Length: 291
Image (cartoon, rainbow, N blue to C red; front, top):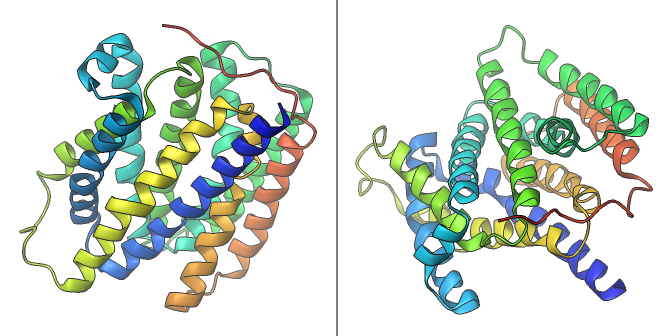
């Protein structure tokens, strides 16, 4: 049991660390959100199908038929979340985006109560209020500024992500690879209608989307979606701030994007809310299983 718990913690931390590089590569590419979403999905789709063949022995159609409803939901929500996140990063400060994203596990607790009937303790409700206060402070720094749209896209991304977390819990035995492949398909299918010529970009752009689509994004998402197999979702949530801290650091180092005071304050409050909501909850119920 201890080995499984450590494995789950490791997958959660690794997943968040790898996904934290998305914002760096998006900014490095200097492409608009639609081009990034389309190109990354083109790389990610075959990677996920390759992993599915190696790990699960192939037969993705059979895996899809077994959990058709669940896979369609996670594929669609993941696509919406991915596009919204990429759009947010291209329209507002990276630090704002990742701080808002850090609220996802707390929002997931609310969604879990509504969707799965999970009772939310006073401890979690306290964390929700703290987190909302932190997000309001972060967004307040953008009121009246052009990047407010980016903040709202980040909120949309975490709502889709929070619902998705609960769907993954509901169908805990569902193929992660097929679900993420569907996400790439949905993302590419939406983005293709809004892209420029995909062959007209420079080498830096292709390098960025290749790193993001072939390596960091697929591995990060696979790691994070598999973590609940070994530990309760509350323990997985403990590692969400890894993305917040790492992504803000990448932006600060690479682009000299120093967070404003409101982001520092709001970020600290959001992380405090996460700690309040998850600390001491390591004995939560395991993921639910259903066909």
